[in-house]
Image (cartoon, rainbow, N blue to C red; front, side, top):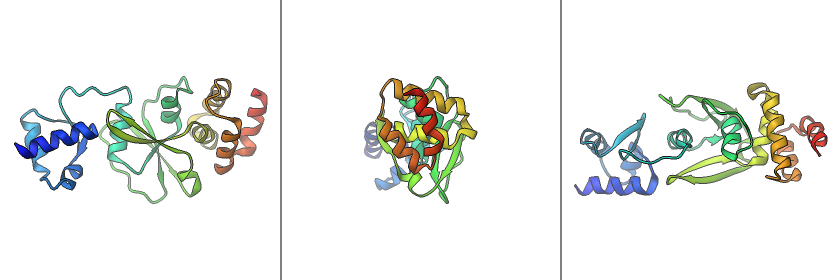
Length: 198
């Protein structure tokens, strides 16, 4: 029972656990499967477990993907939605991964992977804790700049809407947006839209 209590304590701390989380604590991963059979744990996704009836926020998909792919960053439509600067409802989780990174297979939710390299990958990362799980998401300025960089993926109208909402609601500064735009190499693309809003 002591090992099961350790796992339950770990879940209380982290929100969800993977088999590797349990092994890092020096415990056998088979205890997880035993606890699932006993109804003490439920499988949320491939290799991801929580307690039954755990209360998760509307960001459950972001939590699941962040746990399964800890090196990824929530981006584009998912980040726009997280920051409240779009009317779009993402039907999949959008993540950025560094070129050459391994991406796990997801049973659910659907995941849209964008490969990013260099400074554009590392710039503007924020960490947020949701239901005890740490997630990484691009900040508002970087998310707006990414919208223009990947406008062929998400649609120019979505990028413009996010830019307008951000500027009008003063969610970040124009300087921050332009700094992110220069790093994403879309400064000349975003400038005319920004000037039209101001």
